[in-house]
Image: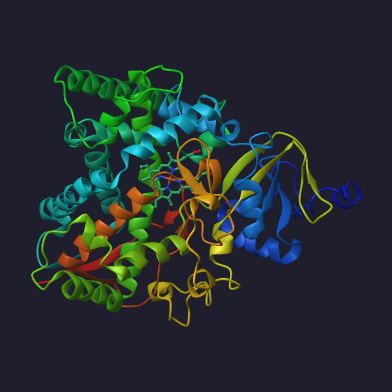
Length: 488
Ligand code: HEM
């Protein structure tokens, strides 16, 4: 009754709930995509729910993505939401612990380091890490076996990313100290830290100790690299060490160190969850895994030469695997922004007030039958233009974007609009700068894995495991066991 009587006609409809503070926290938290879909069917694209006492306004669909992700800086703010979680983990003065204009410069430093030349050097590094991992890991000894794939992909992700982006010196430290330290840091990234950021949670001491220790490791490495007078390395650390802000200030070492942590943490969860999903999807479709192998034989040669960056473009199915998996399993299901001034929702009578938080969920348009026929079906071939399942964005011959269609928020040109229904890497000023790296990393991992193994589900079925939404980034429920068999 309360909810009916005090309904404000200028605010979006509120999802019904029994308890004031709890609101819809539980139903949202158990399965966010289902929550969005069910309430979209009831209330339309824009509705409000109570998340831990906070009025949270969801706006799904392409217009919602545009409204939130391309919101003006005077209207929406990311750092106000994320800083409580990220600053203790990344450290001071970077990402959300600084004005947005500084983040834009930091993103530019990181992005310009990710050149084609750099990617050329990364592919052999990633390939070596993958093959040597499978060679030395006891769970992959012998001709066949069963393995919980998630922890394995988490390790492969951190070894490949740290080696490519941060150099061999840092990579080697993951075999000794850094793995445990990152594990402690990671505990600061739990939803409970988000909800109870003011509380003295028992693991926060370990998180803070790990943050200081990891920062010091990076700063010592920076000093020794400087002392050696290293020039020309292709990793991001080298590039950041030699970057200067627009006001002439050189990026201080502690900021380089904190950006290193941020980069590894930003990429780690999304890429390792995505690679685990890919392996699980391949286990559920051994026919597609075989097609991937045959694609390499056909397009690269039967002797399967060492993989090079240029080869990735010759493997369209290998690329589509990553694309299709991110469509169904985008690890970031909710993107939040604080509202800085009342925001009228175009074409409606609604105004989103400043005491609301805005929530974008681009995964909803990515699984909308309006754009993707049979949206719940994992079918990498749908990304081929003549596939009957091809999404409208592929079928309607896309006009190449020109620079006129793009905008520079300070970190290079990105699409002006968020009109595409497929946005696993976000849009606007907070858009991912790691998209290309993630694609190179994931495609290389997949290509190397299909050279070595055949996967199937342990019970031989085509089923796929459910999703764990209990951490901030969604990932497969564990244990996620697959059966592997060596190719020859
Ligand atoms: C931002 C997704 C990998 C670095 C984002 C955002 C999304 C995203 C959706 C926007 C967040 C927002 O608007 O609040 C992904 C996915 C990945 C991935 C799905 C892998 C499959 C990476 C990697 C790196 C990275 C490998 C680093 C090399 C960043 C950075 C931002 C970002 C620096 C900017 C944050 C901001 O401006 O607020 N990513 N990402 N990401 N990502 Fe990624």
